[in-house]
Image 1 (cartoon, rainbow, N blue to C red):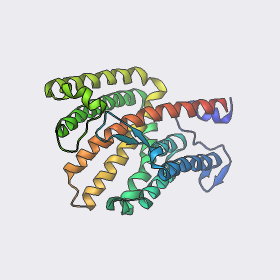
Image 2 (tube, rainbow, N blue to C red; image 1 turned 90 degrees about the vertical axis):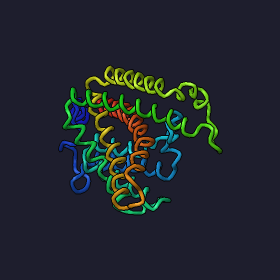
Image 3 (cartoon, rainbow, N blue to C red; image 1 turned 135 degrees about the vertical axis):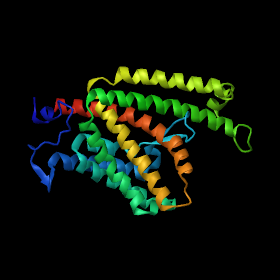
Image 4 (spheres, rainbow, N blue to C red; image 1 turned 30 degrees about the vertical axis):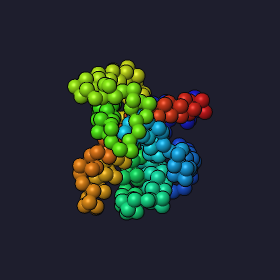
Length: 272
């Protein structure tokens, strides 16, 4: 077994000394990983369509995945690398800002730098059984709430001028128009997803999923909280609505992608 595979055989990220130093406190591999994930983040920032996943079930219509490389950087190589890649995310958010919120350096950079840091500590500190339980509950709740909000969004806009429902809107309108029925279906779907998550997130899958949740919430809650604090015209109610329509779908996507990518990278280290 090679040195790389030994360091990545457990749940602890491969940040232990033993690889020749690259620059300062970073190992050679950490410099390479930071550069690679930073470049992927930059590509997503330069080509916004690359960093978006269409979500027909979400009122937002899409979920951003620009924070995924930041979470992976923290999980794979520790908080310093996570902070560096998060800084790249923040830089593109600042340079390409079309809203006044993200022209504020504190909002553009602060939460993004912390994504990888908090994801790392969630990965190493939350033990497997606890991580599995938390992820199962959060993902199930996120799915139930997202499905319910999608139906509520459809009902609020149905029949209004300029609103053209898509295929899913027309298909599910008979159900979403019956509020008690839609609430029950949302709960059942959330419980079903929670059961599926509990079945899938065994062993090594739970900690990266926990890191994905913490990293995503760091971005969503951090950005929205700072906007409310620094821009009085943006109310807590508005922040809550944005968090529901954007934050929850992004959390679901993050859990799926981070777990899959983590397993892929871990397998690559074992083969190295």
